[in-house]
Structure formats: structure tokens, C-alpha cells
Image (cartoon, rainbow, N blue to C red; front, side, top):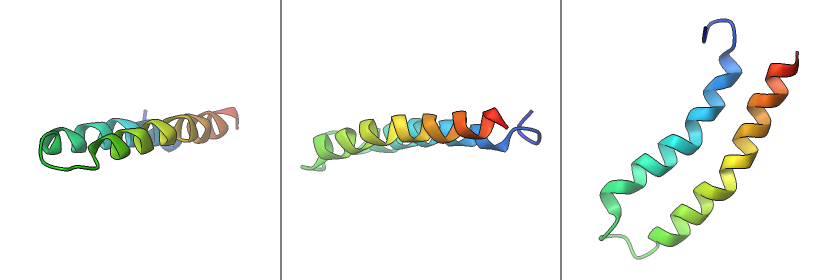
Length: 55
């Protein structure tokens, strides 16, 4: 399925950003900023996946 629709890989970006943040929950003082950035990236990644799915 990914071979025919590689644009769906954009949907992994928010997932990876949130999962990468987990080990740093109590160590990084800018953790909230990281989560806020990942939250802002999510709609953009969904937009790119949807734009590729139209064609």
C-alpha cells in the first residue's frame, strides 16, 4: 500500500515527534515547547497527506 501511496508517510511525522519526546519527559525543560511544536506540525502533515491523496 505504501508503494502506491507514499504521501501517507507524512502521517508518521506527528507520531514520531510525540514518541521521540517520551524519553525526555522529566529531563528537558523545553518539553512543553516540543509538544506544542509537534501539535502545530500535525495539521500540516495531515494537509500534505491529503493533498497527495487527491491526485
